[in-house]
Length: 212
Image 1: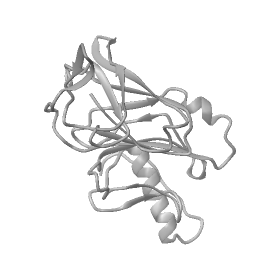
Image 2 (image 1 turned 60 degrees about the vertical axis):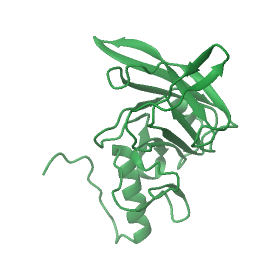
Image 3 (image 1 turned 45 degrees about the vertical axis):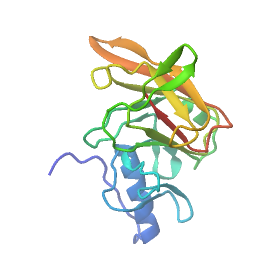
Image 4 (image 1 turned 90 degrees about the horizontal axis):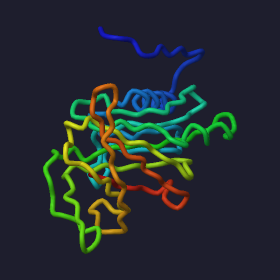
């Protein structure tokens, strides 16, 4: 039957809202992407993610989160679905949590468009330098997040030429762009590429898109 990750005990009868909240919490905790159109809800009135977005970012969903209601404090996120590339960890994320009141809810959700790692047309950074982005793009959504640093890392062999992180406020990358240097790190003999993505108060909780 496989490993058992959690056992949930009910003291009284469940209801649809509670079931939806628990499904969302467990899916985000373990990086599970629903294969049917479904809303990720943390309360009857708070939908934190929808698996049927118009922009198609409904693959490899994972989350950094704190939700006191169900006892989840999670500072590392990676989708458990095949084809996932990124591991996301918190920089200032958990430190900021220490000042939150009990029953706080803060969450950052990453997803991608499922495209292969083929390249697209080059984007000019300045007159002397340009980058060639891959077709796979990611989306970051936040709830109750202010200024945060997110550390993105991946196996260097998966994206061997990725040396620049490109961040945009639009899914087609025609809006304001920011660029971050990706570093090659020797992690106990395994080559990893890593970059720190900084988002300030003006950036979250509004949506951001990024690629390499």
